Amino acid sequence: MVELQKIAGRIASLRRERGYTGEALAARLQVSPQAVSKYS
Figure (tube, one colour):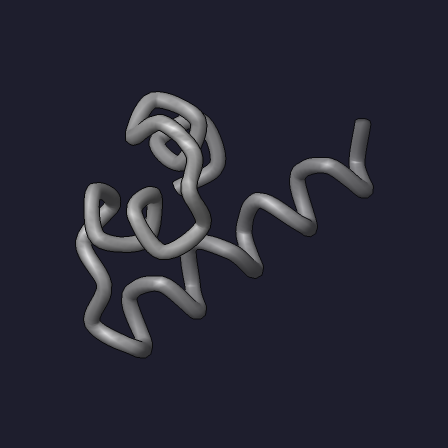
């Protein structure tokens, strides 16, 4: 479970660093915005 938290933190950090909204990242990854918000 700790690994998942590290990955989620890294995703959130990189998303903010690069200026992506959750919806923009979801579109780029071709996943739902809900999937992104789970890890951001």
